[in-house]
Image 1 (cartoon, rainbow, N blue to C red):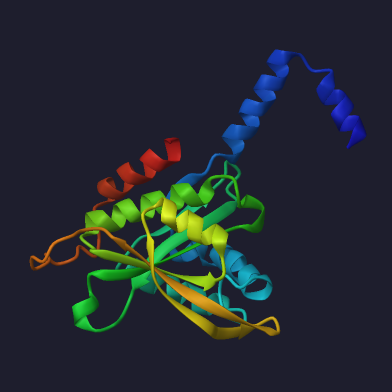
Image 2 (tube, rainbow, N blue to C red):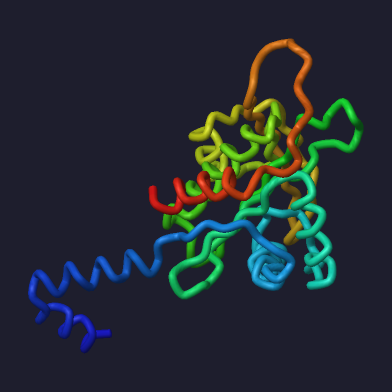
Length: 219
């Protein structure tokens, strides 16, 4: 590390700027829509949280077979977005799935987002969530809900930035890592009014999805 530091100090200003630019380009998140072939990479991130974090109250890691089926089910009604760096490493993913199964709730979804541990704080989550919400609005969904471990002030600030508001808290509801934790429910209205909603478009056209993903990839 000391030798590397000394070598960096010897670089010219132009060389340092070029090095920074190359690093930024390599680590710039590239957004795409997931396929079943991405299940293993998604699962690696999710199981890290299962084993190390209360962002999920799941305790037993999921299997690849389960997650291949999960990818298929998710894509039936909403986007499953990935963010990869220039080398193809998965930095994070975001998706949505039905809030409840009954027909009256078909305009409501629950959002999910996870970033690789080393990618947190790099702006990946903002790009993924921004693109996801825009695509859900295009599909015709009316409400997005998010379930957060409580307390989780960082996630609360993140969701509030996108317009979510807390509409309920469930204390003392999940037991993991030898302690009880709570859950908070956050709501983002995508549309307002009392008119009868149009049917949700379960699938957007490739061009519609590509335009949104490109917008957040280059932002």
